[in-house]
Length: 161
Image (cartoon, rainbow, N blue to C red; front, top):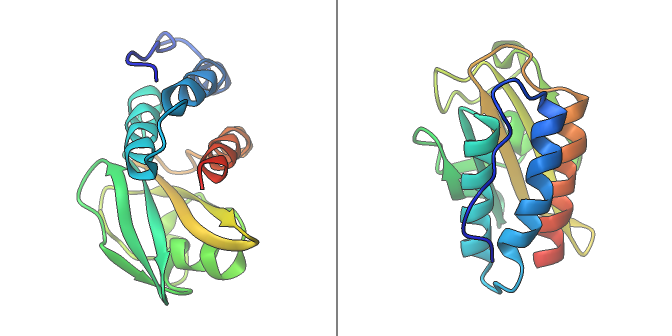
């Protein structure tokens, strides 16, 4: 397990930040068998390196998503199947990028500071097991670069399940 995080400079592009971060995330979880500990450290590293307003995971438990490790302001504890961006990503089994959360039908405002969001499902045995959710205070913050690299984080989490 790594115990330090090397961050890209202030002038680095989003892509450069992710490219420096992803190998460190892999090292961070190497040899640690506990899922909660790994998710907690992954979320902390992503928040610190990428400056998201909020980043965290929700676990699928029955017909709800239940809050797991996160970094940022207080969050919704439970989200119903098909509800909000997270519940919709779970139901549709796909990544959802929302440029303006106020325009998303049924958006759940866990934080009034959130303006845009990306949600990625994590699969185990072909079913959604975990949802990764990131929020930004900026409109249209998330793009294909975020999706590409956060999908690598999802793959890393899937390897831990």
